Amino acid sequence: MPPTRSGLARRQYGVAALFTAPFFLLFFTFTLAPIGYGGWLSLHREQTSGLGLGGEPEQVFVGLDNFTRALTDGQFLGSFVTVGVYCLVYIPVMIGIALVLALLLDSAYARAKRAFQLALYLPNIVPGLIAAMIWTYLYTPGLSPIIDALEQVGIPFNLGSDAGAVGAVANLTTWMHTGYNVIIFFAALQAVPREVIEASTVDGAGQIRIAWSVKAPMIRGAVVLAVLFTVIGAMQLFTEPFIVRDAATTIDQAWTPSLYIYQLTKAYDMGGAAAASLILTVVLAVASFLVTRFSKKGATL
Amino acid sequence: MSPSQTLTRPDRAVSPDHAARPADGRRTRSASPLLGKGVVNGVLIAAMLWTILPLTWLVVAATKGYADLYSTGGFEFARVRLWENLVELFTFSDGLFLRWLLNSFLYAGVGALVSSMISILAGYAFDKFRFPGKERWFGLVLLGVLVPAAVTTVPLYLMASDLGLTNSFWGVFLPGLASPFGVYLGRVFSQAYVPDELLEATRVDGAGELRTFWQIAFPLLRPAFATLFLFGFTGGWNAFFMPLLMLSDHELYPVGLGLFMWRQLINTDQDLYYPLLMTGSLVAILPLVVAFFSLQRYWKAGLTAGAVK
Image 1 (cartoon, one colour):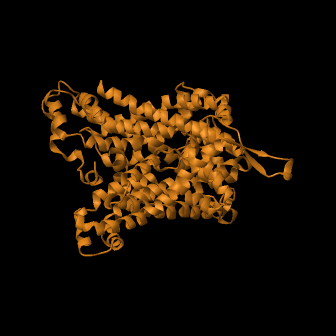
Image 2: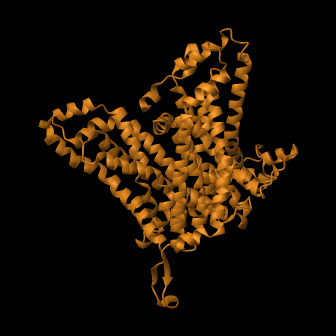
Image 3: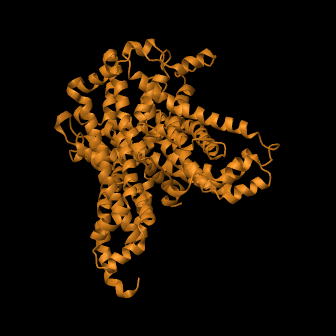
């Protein structure tokens, strides 16, 4: 802007402040302040001085005690193992299915692309709670057409086992989130330049070869981003196991880190819950870093 | 990719070179087009059945009584008593379910309206105005996108408890209003939908910034508003963890939490609670399905603008 308009520019400061104020006010109050408060909480423990009703509860500084307590708690560490195993099963399967479906939708053979996209996306709008309830019934022997059919062909599905529980939750979350990623991958595929595909066709590559060796690598960015968001979401898994555990009995109170945190919150161990939340956040940050790092490394190879 | 590109890009099925390709004499190398077409659409149909059948099961289950639920097949209709179930659902406990639905419309509907407006205002300001430290502030917004809910939930609960907001409408309503991702989308949409030249022209005409926003920019940003609203509405409608922590009074529950409560009670009276739960779940999904189908193009624009960018 030319300097003669500096008056106009100055007027923009006030307006900009006015326009962004509602957001930042709420953002500071309900996101940044809680993070700071959580940090403070994680270093304190509530103690009641005196007996029973006599004393006011008091926050006592305990240093890193809450962190060492969490990190030496087998239940908490176990929750990371469970969620790690779950991620190893769920993420490749879900992203793989989404990628294959998007490539199929993008192929010249696919018909009724719009209807397919809508149908595949539909589970994503179902509340996690209701999806979990539906599938819990679909996992119940005697009620479930699926379990009955599996048993008839000789594949017993044991929800009561550890593997069964991971499988049950992973199937549920795959059902919910695949369509979302299909839409994103499909949109990214639409942006692949036509000339590239034409060139490969002229070179004699078949449809499958083009899909796998030409198209898929070109939407690598979208796939990496999807993996990143999936990792962040999957590691905070809460609602689905919270419901499915009614049928899958091996899912305990501390099956995932979020369930563990919920359990501590309900027990009013706020210092412990805050410390566990921060540890989960650090693990999430490291995992996100690894995903982006790993994908960059792969790209240069 | 800008959202407008996403919206206007034609579906590739209509591009003739693409569709014609398999027939140009290369049959020896790839499978025959007929086979290819069968396999591709077959797999897609199988995937579609996988996504649709559980919902179909819910629809069928909502028409049954408890006895029929266990004695008949999951996709098989027994005596259809959908109407009885619905009447029971809406009259049980003085219309508690209706109360929950209304609560959800307040938390999710009004919440999404306010939240989208806040995001649009901030996103527009980040796109069109010049102010000191702009990109640094925007960096803070982007960082906010990455903050996991896990780290704020417990402190939020305690803060609300100190302020006496737990077990109140505001304890659930307020924390959901600021959406960093919404502000990010707001900026992207403002870039795509509101041409800078148009604003320059109105500024030269001497219109104030507020009036310019309301009369020129906001009408152009309506599709963006719809997208943000839909995201906020589904997110709010589906929220579970926060209400679960904050609320103990049944009268304040959103519909999801209410259904969860019924589920906890199911073994006390299965004849009563099974149909309530099934029919209630079906009814609770309907507003989302209606919103989704009636405004689907905004949905897709938002998804792809956020992820492909």
